[in-house]
Length: 301
Picture 1 (spheres, helix red, strand yellow):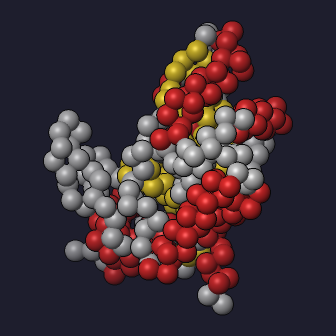
Picture 2 (spheres, helix red, strand yellow; picture 1 turned 45 degrees about the vertical axis):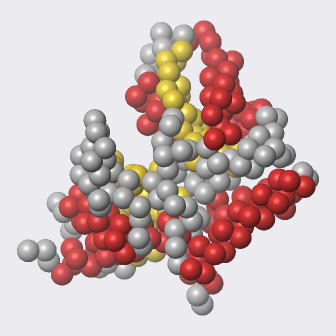
């Protein structure tokens, strides 16, 4: 039997998932509106008007922004002193089931080698949960990403020859976005991972999307490379929604890890204009805040 606190925690996380499915995070919402205001193409301005109307209707009707509510992916930072450390996987799974029913979310999880739908967005090692242990802390920090099937999930990863360097990385990124970016509901949020192998790079590219879209990598050379690639992608002019416009991307974030001298792993993940991500910080007494969506709290005051 589940304890009262475990039930309460699952309710908090389920409501958090609902919040993320209905409201863009502050950084994405702000960047999207800024791009819409600065757009010069008349057709593109009309498309942005439709996008902003969708955001308003989503909040007014209390419904998800997009019919594809994605696959739930969780990145958990949990303190060694957190009282829920033994139960967190079960709690998140219960929360996913509750959010699927109450939001509602579209059931998107099917048998990996077939078409049988589980009906509640759980099962088959799902939802995906990645953990990071924080010593001497009792906090529970959960970052969630709703990965849609047309934009966030069809990422790519490749191991380049090291001499290909930055030029090879840019070529890989530009070819990827030019090939299928128009079908991924641009303007896109592009995450790039650079590491030792295809797996490392792919994982880093998804984590790059968890950073605010208006942030820079702490390393200056990497931050400059983010800007260089962003400028290059914007020159493609395929946004919004593939109708053409001034901006192809909302932003470009890069995360890196040490690599072998003989390999250069590169991964790319993208979010659509409705990149749905969020962060919640839960204390051991079940008080919480959602730093990714501060404006919602301000609007209710």
